[in-house]
Every structure is written in C-alpha cells, then in structure tokens.
Length: 453
Picture 1 (tube, rainbow, N blue to C red):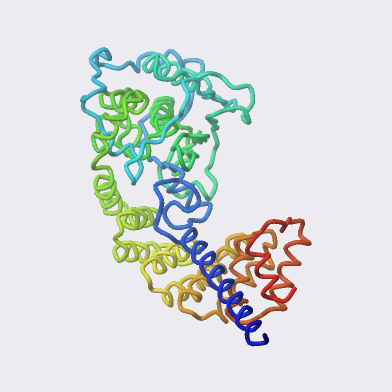
Picture 2: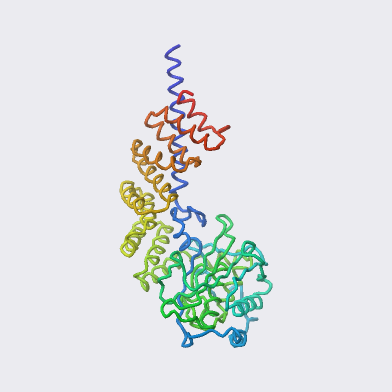
C-alpha cells in the first residue's frame, strides 16, 4: 500500500510538472513566439511603449522642406491662399481595380491593410491659428473621397476618432531633434481586425531649426500628408510627385491620381484587389526600410525599423546587425537592447539574450519595463534548464506585479522544478490576497495539491 501511495504521489508530481512546463512553455511562446500578423503588444517582439509608437502603431515622422515664406502666418488669408491648392487631374479617371497605386507601400510589413471600419470618422481640432487651414484640408478630403468615408466634427477629444493638435515643440517621444519635422502621426488599431481605433496628429507651428512660424503652404501640405497616415497608410510612396512621398511639403498638398487610387482601393472593400496589390508588400517594405536606413544612417529609428522588418521576414541575423547599428547611435536606449535580446532569444541564443536583456534592465527607468525584462530573462534561463536562476528572475518580476497570473504561473513552474513547495503556497497566497479569485484555476489547484495544501 505504501509503495502504491508513493507511485500515485509520483504520478501526481509528474503530471503537475508536465502541466506547468507546458503552460510555462505556452507562456514563453506567447511572449517570445514568432510575431503574429497583428499590431498588438507582441506583434514583432514585445516592444516597449515608445518603440510601439515609432513602429508598430503606425508612427509616421515626416520632414518638410521649408518654403521661402517662413516668417509669419496670416490666418485671415488662409482660405483664400489655400483655394489655389487644387488638384490638376481629372478625378473621374480613377481606376480602383487596376489603376496605378502604391498600396504595397501603404500596407504594414506583413502586407496587411490598416483602415477605419466606418464611413463617418469624427475629428476633434484643438483650437489654433491654423484652424482655417485644417478645416480646408478636411473639406478637401470629404470632397475627394465622398462615398468612401466622411470626416465629421467631434465636440470633445475623448469622443473623436482623430485628434489634431498644433504645438510649438514635439516631446521626446516624437523625436523633437528632427531638423525640419513639421508633422507626426500616431495610429492605434485592433490586433485582429486591423481596424483603426484612434489617430493623433501633431503639427508644429514653428520650424525646429529656425524657430520661425511654419508657413501656411508648408502647414497645409504637411497636414494633408499626415491625414493620409491617420487614414491607415503606414509607409510612403516612392514617387516624389505623390502627396505621400517621404518628404512632405514638396507640393502644395495636392492629391495625385496614385494617392486617390491607393486610398480608394483601401476603402473599397474589394479584398481581391487588396490581396493582389499587396502580394509583394513584405519585400517592398524591406527595400523601403533599407533605402531609408541608407538615406538616414545616423537615425536609430532607421535601423530599428529595418531590424523589425528583417525579424518579420525571419532574417534574424540581419535583424541583429541592424539593432547593433541602432545601439551605436543610441547606446543608452534600453528599448533597443530589449528588442535585441528578444531577437537573440527567438534565434535560440539564450545566453546572448540574457546578456543583452540584463543591459536593458540596467538602463530601463520604467517599472513596468523592468518587470517584463525580468520575466524575459527568467524565461531565457528556463530554456537553458537553469531553473534556479529562472526562479530568481520570476520572483523579482512577480513581487512587483502580484496581480499578473502569467508571472505567477512562471514562478510556480520554477518552484516545481526546484522543489520549493512552501514558496508555491506563499506566492499563491500573495496572489489571492491581492484580490484575485483562484476558484476553478486548474494550475493553482494542482500546484497547491503538489505543495501539500
């Protein structure tokens, strides 16, 4: 009977261990696994907040070539001046089935189209001396794309789909050191449907270099460009004549036929056309990123973006080389080290991942980021079967974020592997005392049974 009891207990422990390892492994895959074709937190490597803004969330930074008139802005003449900015092509000739377009550049790096899943898109405008120009731009969009979507006015920013704000300076996250940057757009979209949820456009009222007022012409042209980003166009057109060319301000804010056809294709709902036109998007995005890095070799974001696209294309070694160049430019940027560490992890180079992630932890100032990095280091150790070290890092993460069930699972898994029964009961109790219900949780139930509770 005693031997039978021991066998039963051994089988229970074995089952629990296997279960926890499976859950732990699933957790590892969820955190580190191959990037899904989404734009959620774990799209291409678990990027930190500001990097999400720059890359995954449709962050678009655009330079503008200042016109000769950069001294003053006369809002009284704004509408009069902009009335001259009229398209010079016949819009009735737009061919949204096989017309010339740059849809492969407009898609994200996985070849997916991001757009609003509605025809009425509300806009809130923070009042500024450019109000007339902004409203003129909105009317131009409504006239040009009538039937595809329509901009309407929101009474409060919280109710708006798109928010437009005019500021004198960009904050750090908006890369205020750019020489002639006049507009920046952040877009946020659903991870599964790829539908836009919110967009924020910031426009400068002063040129960063000269501190002079942005001219009406440059402001209008840049805003027209940024609004295309806010409608879901991720990249830029390679054609310098298009409004969506990488350098804004090269024209008067006029739509070309390619601009119109691209946006109309996006909002046409014709999936067959979209699939055909974005078939080479990943290759196109890679070439675009290479060219951008070549043109802007001193910008870390150039190499971060290239690394991300290499990663999506499963070219991990190339991604790592790009991250190394980004670190040379921003050696104290913890987010680059974090992404690079995750790239090492996904390449199966766990010790290299640990070394880089420890550097990310040292440089990181955000508590939430430190928790994530600790968990990532623990996972890397677990992949090397070093559960003692993994336990220490999982514990370090859990004591900061006691409500996170995934951290608790990882910690339990490490405890089982290192025979820490009392600790299992202690951590589950901490989790419960933090206000969490453990009823019906199979993992916790089996863990407590294994720990003798």
